[in-house]
Every structure is written in C-alpha cells, then in structure tokens.
Amino acid sequence: MSKARSNGQARQGEAGGASPLSKSLYSLSLAQHSNASKPTRTDAASDMCPVCKSSRYLNPDMKFLINPECYHKMCESCVDRIFSHGPAPCPIAGCARTLRKGKFRQATFEDLKVEREVDIRRRVASIMNKEESDFETLKDYNDYLETVEEITWNLILKIDVDETNQRLQRWADAQAAELGVSNSRHRSAFESDPSQPSATGVVLKKGGGQRQRALDTANTSSGNTSDAGAGPKDKGFAFRGLKKRVIPPPEAPFDPFDGWSIVPQYYTLQSEYDAGWLTEKQNDIAHRVGGYQFSNFYNRALEEALGGLTVFVGEEIAKRDEPSLDAGVATLRAVGAAMAGGGDVRMDDVF
Image (cartoon, rainbow, N blue to C red; front, side, top):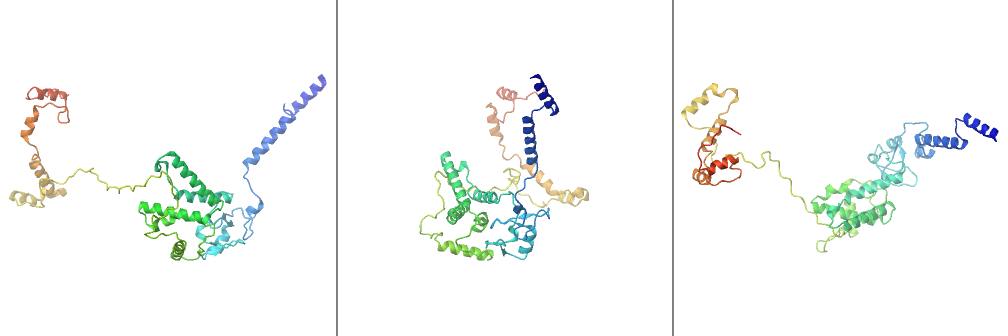
C-alpha cells in the first residue's frame, strides 16, 4: 500500500504536482484560449471572390465590397472593372439587379444577413422617430414601439414588403407636411429596401427625374394619392395618444444688447452743426489727429444736456419721505436718513 502511494506521488512529482485529469483540463483551456485569440476564419468560399475566383490566400490585401441593392459580395478589383463606366447588372448568376459603383461599400458585419437587418432598422428608425414625450401615456408609446418592431420584422422577413414600404412612404410624407418640409427635401430620407424588387416595375437605369415621375405615376395609378374632396389624407399609420406636432417658432436673430436700444430717444444727431467756434475746432488739425470724430463729441454733449429730461424733481421730493427697501434705496442707513427728514448723510465711513 505504501509502495503504491509512493509511486503515485512520484508520478505527480514528475508531472509537476498535478494529476492527469487536471493536466488535461488545463491543456484544453489553453487550446481554447489560443483558438479564441486567433482571428476566426470561415470556409474557403467566403475568402474567394465569386466573380473572378481570386482568393485571399494569394492576395492577402484583397477587399470585399457589397452593394445594398442585392448584398452580393465581390472584390474591389471586380467592382472597378465592371462598374467604372456606369451602371451594370450584377455579375452574380441569377441576380438581375442594376448596380452602381457609388453604392458599393465595405461590410461592417461578416454575416450579410445581419448587415441587411441593420440597414433596415436604420432606415425604419429614421422615419419612425417618435419619442415618449410625443405620446400622452406610456402605454401608447409602448404600442407605438410594438408597431415599429412589427414593421421592421415584416421587412426583414420579406412579408408584405410593398405594402409596408408604401405605408412608410405615406407616413414620411405626412410628417414632412406637418413640419412644412418640401417633398424634394425629405424624399432622400425615405428609401425603400433596395434588395427587394419593386412592384411598380421601375427600371433603375433611368435618371433621377424619370424615376421619380415613374414612381409618382405608379402611386397615382395604385390610388395612393387622394383628391382634395376625398376626405382626410391617409397617413399610413394611426397611433393612439399621439400628440399633434407643433412647429416651433423661428429663432429670433441674435441681439448682443438683449433688447436695450442705444439709439437716441430725445434728439436727432446731425452730421454737422453751424457754430463758429465749433467750425474753427473742426478745421484745426490738432483736433482731428488720431482719427478723432466730432460726431462722438456731438453725441456726448447732447446726452449730457438732455439726459435729465425724464427726471421730475417734484416727484422725487414727494417720494423722499416714503421709506422703502426697493432698488431705489440702497442700504438701511439710507432708509434711516430718509425717515429722519432728509439732510446730509455723513460719508466718513463708506461702509
């Protein structure tokens, strides 16, 4: 018994004092840590361009770009080679979407499904941007959030895509009309999911004006635009408890004097005054040196002469015997002097 125990202790001493089970667990944890520290790579197909079949193994600096029209991935060289001369159809087999080079970008997420979901959520959030303060109760706001989530998942799961996009378009138009924003300014804020085919059949190769006219014609034919006498316009969504949006008043221009007017109220300042002694001083170069302007002298002289027009001495004497603690009486000592019947106040101690 003692011999077997001594052999086991000897084996643990050779293994660094750890049992075989603990050593295997420790090695397994090291293997997991080393695998986590290495950059994860997917299968070889994800590192190969589906157009030119170039591999990242041969070109480590190769960059893959996607287009939100179809979210098909291709290398940067293929994008420059195919789309540099203008719009062209997607080179992936089975995709007939017309792509433009300006819309290609590098994917943020490795999973393109996640990339598409993030784009849809960002687009819906830019339109359905109400806050809790816009609703009367918290329950109304929660119902609004539930509707927004339902809209988002309909677009993600491709359920009633055309109807949902039309309702979002009408809601965006109604919100822009409440704010007084022109239709052309907010048009760019709403863009339907480009990865979904449009029911209107608009060809993407058309120019901006032709595409917009085609969309307006399709919306008119489908009954999206209502006549003036057809009743209230359909906003796409109706939320309970939603407060009516009030347009904030325009911001007033900045006034550095905060409403205080520096324009003379009791006189009109002239450019020149006909006085002999004044004309003589104006012609003297000693008075005009250093950029001195006689208009400053005119303004100051008139202010000193007319500054007491609004001071009525009789009213001041009548109110002198009425003690008060308002801004007209500075200290309690001044109040006591006024109650004593006036007279000179001793100013030996200014405090």
